[in-house]
Length: 107
Image 1: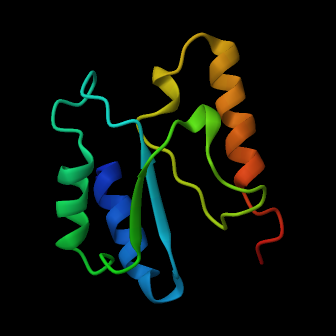
Image 2: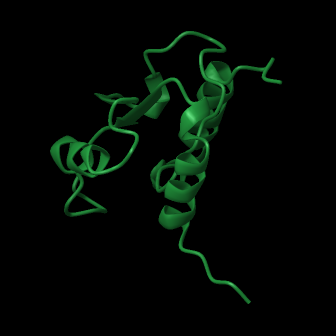
C-alpha cells in the first residue's frame, strides 16, 4: 500500500506535466486563520524553489468573485478552500464560479 500526502501528489502532478503547462495562476485571500504561515510571500518562495517558478503568477482573489473570464482555465485545483466557505449557499456559489472559469472544451 502506498501512502500519498495530497500536497506532495499535487507537486508531483505539476512537475510531471510542467512541459505542457504554459501558465499557472494561484489565487488566495491569504488568510492566516486556518494556516498560520499562509502568505503570498511564503508561497512565492516555494514556487521559486520549484521548476515552475517561471510559469506561476500569484494573485489575491476570492473564489466567490474570481476576476477571470468564462472558460479561461484548462485545469482547476482547489485545496483547503471549499470546506471553509459557509453557509452552504456560498459554497455552492463557489462551485458555480469554479465551473464558470473551467474550459469545457479541453481535449
